[in-house]
Length: 165
Image 1 (cartoon, rainbow, N blue to C red):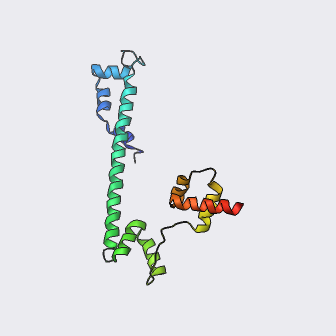
Image 2 (cartoon, rainbow, N blue to C red):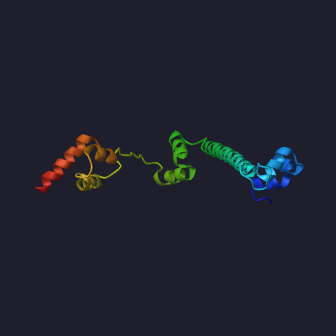
Image 3 (tube, rainbow, N blue to C red):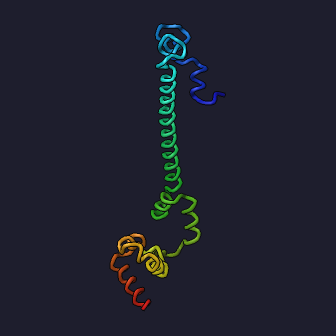
């Protein structure tokens, strides 16, 4: 019905709106811009509306954070309720990648022993990466990027330079 909280507050008659209609001395300054003349310097209406806007922003932000926390907690509870009877490894996977992805992995690899190598990139890719970047990057930067040791990167650089000759 109302577009936002500001609209609702205005239509319901918040404190400042009621004070504006009551005609107090302070409120006349509000009506006239602070100097007793309409639109004078020190426009109070601008200050009040900025304050109202800031207050609404804070309130909206707090509400959004609370909603996010609530939905996050609800999601965690739903996952933990759904995975309550899962084996440890599947429960851990569900927390990490979600229940549906865990089920996909289970359907594809159930019954198999799977080992994940420490190295993410293939040896071919690592050598090519080092060949392309050995003049532009330091040994340490390449090692960090590829999750290799500095010593291993230096070995590959030597191999590449030896094969160039």
